[in-house]
Image 1 (cartoon, rainbow, N blue to C red):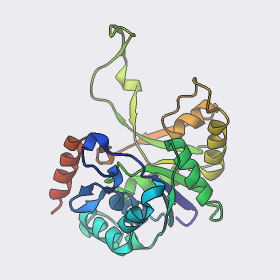
Image 2: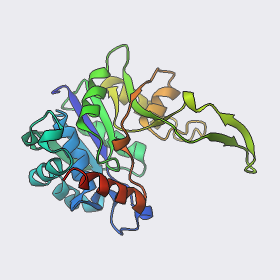
Image 3: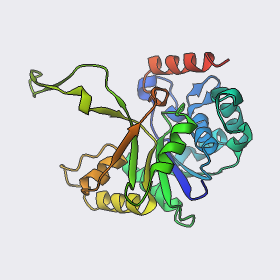
Image 4: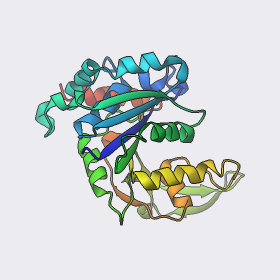
Length: 255
């Protein structure tokens, strides 16, 4: 997928994990979470990957995406018997680490700017906190982006009963969960649409009605359609120590 590039956001503090280091650098089976997130992209055939990280510790993040780290992460999370890609492709991508911004939106914008010379057709935006996203899902997302469907995101059904509550905590209504999806990353866009969406968001930083928590939210705010395709439970976000233990167990099952 030479026409596809990725921005991986890795500036989360990891406070809820209680690790005392940036979340993307927290070890998962002995490797930084970031190593898995980038290796998965490379295994899917993404040739250019930009990682946005805290500006005062870029070298630590650069160490996490060295070829040997990516190869080891790929061999751990996606053994050759479980995927259709050879492990060696985990080191084939051009990976660059750049300073992010004060917010997630600003960090993604910095990543987009770093891709200006590459001029990809499709840009995937991914969170390093979803390290075990399968390469198959990444490939499917990238291939789903067309001129007619310029924004494609993964989502999974919600199992729990959902209630909308008012300011006092009282139930206002029960939400029909059949029409709700829990959205994951990476999210895939044409480069042109993603750039316009971030310019749109940057011009409205003081608009309190624009409360986009992801890149698809900016596209929605522009009035553009966003397609949701089936995600994967293994693309879960690691936020707490319990999430990390679950991911460790997932990897242990592959040994």
